[in-house]
Amino acid sequence: MIVDSRVPAMEPVVRAGVGVGSTAGGPSPSAMPKGNSKMLISALVTFLVVILILYLINMLPIDGRAKQIARIVVIILGVISLLKYIAVF
Image (cartoon, rainbow, N blue to C red; front, side, top):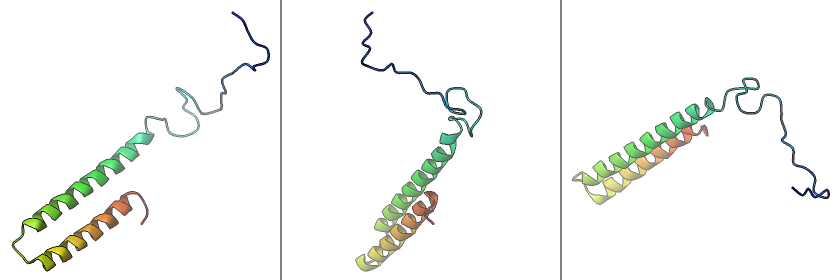
C-alpha cells in the first residue's frame, strides 16, 4: 500500500456523549424520533380530517356561497390546528 505524505490522514473525531451506544449527553437517538413521529401522525390525522370535512361539505345540498364560506372556515381551522402541531402557536 502506498501512502501519500502530502494528504493528511483522516482520523475519526470522538466527542463526549456522541456516538454509537453512548448514554451520556441527552436522549438516545432512538428516543428522539418518537416525539417527531407522534407529531407527524397527529398532523397527518388532522389533514385527513380536514379533507374528509371538505368532502362532506361538498356533498351538502346547499347553495355555492354557503359551501364556499364553510370551506374557508374549515381550511382556516385546519391550518391553525396544523400550526399548533408544529409549535408555531
